[in-house]
Length: 250
Image 1 (cartoon, one colour):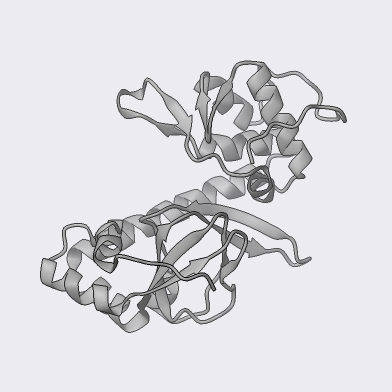
Image 2: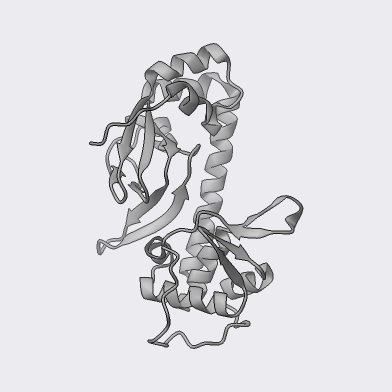
């Protein structure tokens, strides 16, 4: 295991869940959180295990994944620095419903279950953030089920991409920040990585999106939204194409 140097005070204060909490409480949390480093593609948390802590993302990126009955990995959503996971198991004491996999070199913090539960029940600010987070999880789950119900493979890919679009202040710029790898997108859309590569190439060729380092600029958000709904739109290249250049986005 790689040795890492963590500033607990800074790591704690960068967590969205703890913003605005009393300074004395933050100091207590510094001594309670255990930090751990994970390399790319390591399992951080196993589906089915009993959650003993709230997982705090300090750096890197994680993907929440589940497993189908035939053993296939199904990507659910991503966790970025400042995000957290495992609150449901902390609340009800039941096993973790999904696994966590690192998508880059990642540092996470573990806040013990007892302390996490106490924060949720004694601090209204934390409780409200947990409730809002759970609402977002439910909405994301509904969008994902809708996407997986789309028959056309490329439309499922477009739907996953559309769900990750961020609109900047004023609504003048739409982007997909920190672009996921093609394999991660394939897991979420239940398609092959090659299908993701072809779909991205189509979007770039038609000017719907533009590559900008590790992000995509969505030049035509309405077109992407239409394609995500499964309606035939601007892109007409057949999905059965077997020869298409790979897009180096992950």
